[in-house]
Length: 201
Image (cartoon, rainbow, N blue to C red; front, side, top):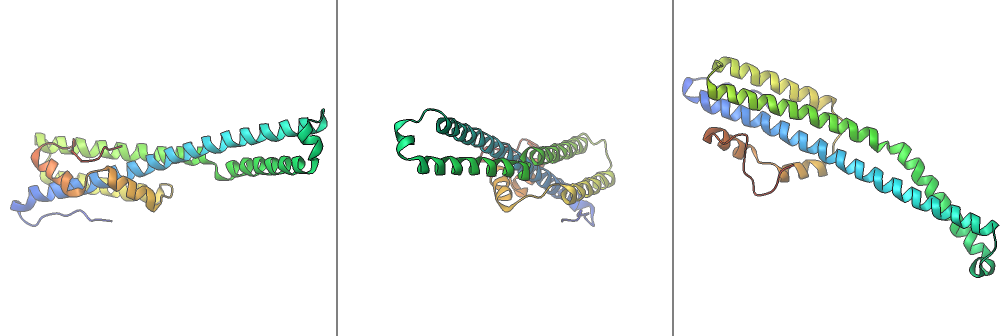
C-alpha cells in the first residue's frame, strides 16, 4: 500500500499531484483488469465443464440403452469392455457435475465482476478529480484530501474483494500502462487516454 505523498513546498506541488493521481489510477486500472480477467476465465471454465458433462451424460446414457436393448455385434462380443467404458463415462459425468457444484464458478465470476465494476467507479472518480484539477475548481489541499480518500477506498476494496492470483496480476500488468506512462499522460494532458504498445482490457 502506498501513502499519499504531500510535497513540502509549492514548487513540488504539481508533481506531487501527478504522482499521486498516477498511483491510484494505476491501482484501480490494474485491479479492474484482474477481476474482469478472472471472471471471464471462470465463465469460460463453467461452460467447458457444463458442455463436457452433457456430452459424457449423453454417451453413458446411450451406452446403457444399447446394453438393455438389442445387442450390436461389438457390444455382444465385448460386453465387459462396453460396461467398463459406460462405467467410466458415468463416473466422469458424476465427477464433473460435482466439481461444477463445488467450484461454483458462476457465483465466483459474478463476485469478481462486481469487484471490477467497483474499481471502474473508482477509476471514474479519479478521472473526475483530474478534470477538476485541470479546471482549477479545487484547491490543491482539497485535491490531496480527495486522493487520500480514494486511496482508502482502494485499500478497503482490496481487503474485501475476492481472492486473485499471480497469473491474473501478470496479465493485468502486461495489458495496462505503467505508473510512469500514466504520470507522463497527466502532465502532457493526454490522460486518461494513455497509449500503450499492447491493447488494454
